[in-house]
Image 1 (cartoon, rainbow, N blue to C red):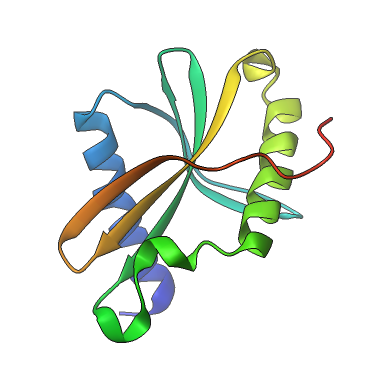
Image 2 (cartoon, one colour; image 1 turned 180 degrees about the vertical axis):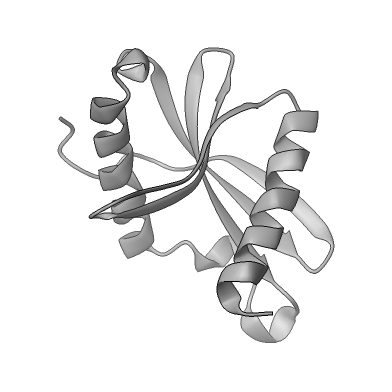
Length: 120
């Protein structure tokens, strides 16, 4: 299994987990020239951008630590693009969450980081 296939597998696990917890998935693997966001969902009129990280064991560090400052900037930039592209969400409150999967343990980290950028 290559990295993309493995990533897709864990993103699917994360999406199922989120749906069980009341998140309506509105988009997956949204790409633009700036980067990609794994999962985009809605809960309580909040538009949530999810980054999914997986680690198979402690030798690679913890999954939640893998969302670097640079990755956060990219996610924020892509989220700006998404909200311009999908005007129906332009007035929604926005949040950036992380789904960390360490082996078989799933952790949802709400508001994992704040918006980094200039807005649109």
